[in-house]
Image 1 (tube, rainbow, N blue to C red):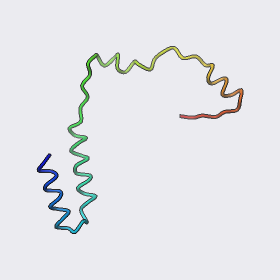
Image 2: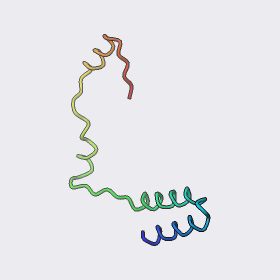
Image 3: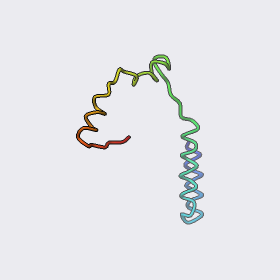
Length: 71
């Protein structure tokens, strides 16, 4: 990571700032390639947290009052 920052800083300095977007993309690409997720539980419990029993009352009340909320 230090080499990445140093080489990007040198490239930016030598190009008089023209390689700032290139350096930003380079660092972001490195971070995404090394991104990982460590779960304490299994994946099914992580993915199923939003599967609670949800009724249609909120939708109907929104229709009754003419409120349009979209996600």
